[in-house]
Length: 114
Length: 114
Image (cartoon, rainbow over all chains, first blue to last red; front, side, top):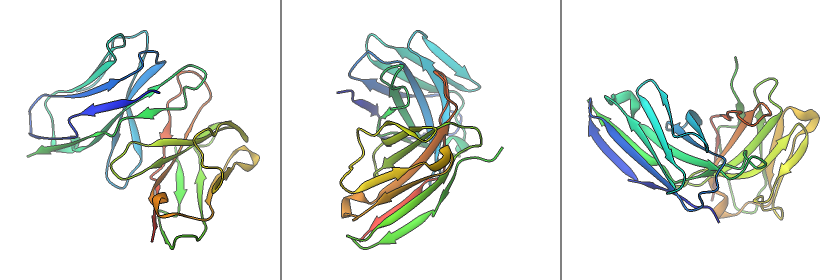
């Protein structure tokens, strides 16, 4: 059974700092991996999607990497801002046939202090 | 473009009562998902529809939960009777069909069962 773990559960950093969020999964047979952002009282917003054949994806100040063989992904946020404060969730899709069945971690709650 | 709409946003009921949630996906999105997110956890897929057919309902507690998607557009999720452990945020998401389709999430319905 696939399990997704995110470390740390919470993180507080001063504005401007670069930071890394970690995600690990127990079964390396994944179809893709996604990083989401969740703001309080709101739904999830997709940030980056990495196919299993890819190593990384970048969008603005965000960079996500994937090491499928070791079951790990990282989300790098450069020059953090208070507006980045949110919960970040990692999710894996187990196969092409069941790609909608996302398996989520519990998330990392990020707080960026001005 | 309008996003995924959900109602109500909040609901408080007594245990053993019934409750229904409504979701209106993004126009043209054939695939619709219902997730349950318990406080402090990542979302868990309950059911996935493709048009008005069920693709995956393996994690739906069918003794008390039911869902339908009439005419392949709006969907309702019902709980009858509710238990204390059903307290959670119920998220609806939709996507275009296809292997790289991003899921777009609604704001969710927060259910409290007393």
